[in-house]
Image 1 (cartoon, one colour):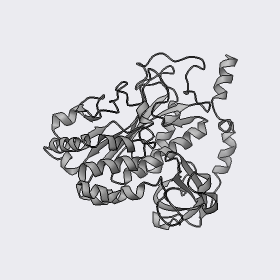
Image 2 (spheres, rainbow, N blue to C red):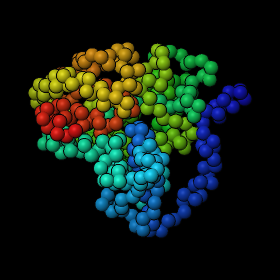
Image 3 (cartoon, rainbow, N blue to C red):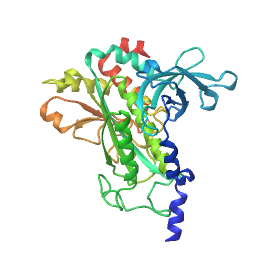
Image 4 (tube, one colour):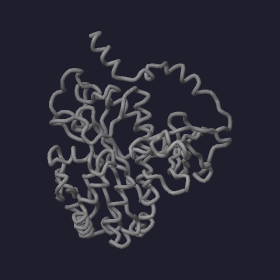
Length: 379
């Protein structure tokens, strides 16, 4: 028993064992009219998130009240040391569930010294596309899967030497032998609601220690903003618990499910009576650009997703495009209810868990709603 406890303690970070009662004493101190603002941005990997905090004299009422800031890009894989200052341009503001009101979280775009977007800043080009297609009122919902790991990289709750029982009882499961890390999931859910994230729901996934939450529906550029901040909240909650949230598309080799970020899409026409014909038209367009979409559905040009999209474990093959009603082994799934009602939305099941939501939503909107000329212009 003592050996098991020691192994369990080793799988979580030292900082998680700090006395939280002492911390709360300081967190409850009044701060006057001052406001803490935490700036959040995507680093040079295209997957990692960074943040730093500053004080403002008063609570900002809108994003326009948040001043631009800067950071050392040479320490985030975004610049050389000889020219390392990068700009943080605020784009979206949220309530801070960690330091509470009136403090804020602010998502920022990263700009280089010449004011051009950094290489991993896909928001600017995404926003241009969303402006072009705004008459279609495109809605997105993204289903973020992730895996809880110890800081040793081993799935949280798994036996130290061996494997849990085979997949089957874990999806939407309940019980100490089936749901690993529910405390983290529920704290993340509450943090999202407090912050103003449009979180729709959550559930345990097929692989033990793997979970999913859904964000949406969100209109246009808002989808990327919301998903990135929801990821930041997840990483921060996991930090408090001393574990790691991994977005790896295939965290465990073998007969275990991978992790995706299924993307639900609809337009005004798709949501109206007879909308199924517009869904089918969009799917036809997507079928012709399968390879292009695969290249932007993970930050490494498809090299991560190839481990996941094998045609097994509820995935399609990365090499083939397919579509079907209620088919979770297809590239594009039309939900059964949509097939019955002849209107609604479709689900693109190809994006990897570590995808950039700006790249994914931009690619889908461009392919489905812009002609080839407009699509080339937006790049």
